[in-house]
Amino acid sequence: MSSDTQYDSLATAYDLVWKIPAVRPLLPLLTSTIKATGNFENAAVLDLACGTGIGLRIMKSFGASKLVGVDISPQMLEIAKTTVPDITVHTADCSKPLDHLGLEPGSFDVVLGFWLLNYCPSSVEMAGMWGNISQFLKPGGKFVGIIENHDVARPSSVQDMKYGGMMSEVKELENGQGWSVHVVFDTTPKIEFDAHRLRGPILEEEARKAGFGEIKYNRPSWDDIGLVMSEGIGGEDGKKKEWWTELVEDPPNYVIVTTKNG
Ligand SMILES: C[S@@+](CC[C@H](N)C(=O)[O-])C[C@H]1O[C@@H](n2cnc3c(N)ncnc32)[C@H](O)[C@@H]1O
Image 1 (cartoon, protein in one colour):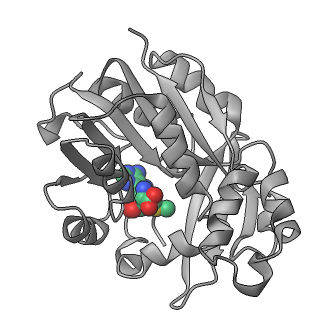
Image 2 (cartoon, rainbow, N blue to C red; image 1 turned 180 degrees about the vertical axis):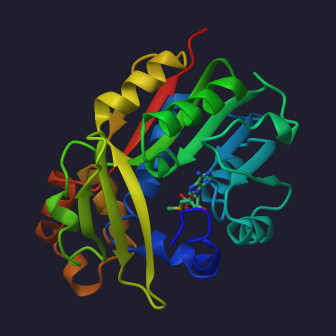
């Protein structure tokens, strides 16, 4: 399915993904990462690939007051509008220039991109996305994202359905820049989609060219696992700490943070 329409049919079920053991530890990790990144009382936040709006909901809980979401899927944005009151949304491809949206360049304190950068089949789209992130951030503004683990082709934690999410197909891209992946979740209805994951040095180079400093990579810790265990995530298996080992040692995702040069 083409990447610009594949989420439309998933929109009403999509938030189930956030209860999956492979994904849930990212929530406490995002919270602690954002807390450590700054004070966002009254902040202006732009969420690129905002989907159903979880990033904007998190930032609202930190006191952010201007909440703008952009996504390629109108159906995902329809759900976002119902879950985050007061947001403004725009339908657009975030790898292409976003000048037509009427957003003021350099006016956002934070840009979010939770699984934004995994929709770049080549460095051209990666450059486009970092260009947009940079264009709308204030100097010194923060980018907080979730990316797929780009250090290995297929992390062991998602080689099967143990943690409720699986990379069922991973293929080298012809341009040699990374992999195309098919991701499936153990949800009812089944949620699955295609994505692209470029190698780390390509992501980092395009970020640097767009004016960003060092990228900090955070991965779920045992503290994050403890929190999701206390929520009952993972059912009977999830009550045993050792069951989570592969997820901590070879995680499918990283939370990344970087700052736009001042
Ligand atoms: C895995 S979902 C993540 C949604 C949300 N950020 C979250 O964390 O729950 C990926 C989102 O990226 C959107 N998307 C995919 N390619 C895109 C593109 N080129 N430009 C804008 N949005 C895109 C999809 O429509 C979908 O809502």
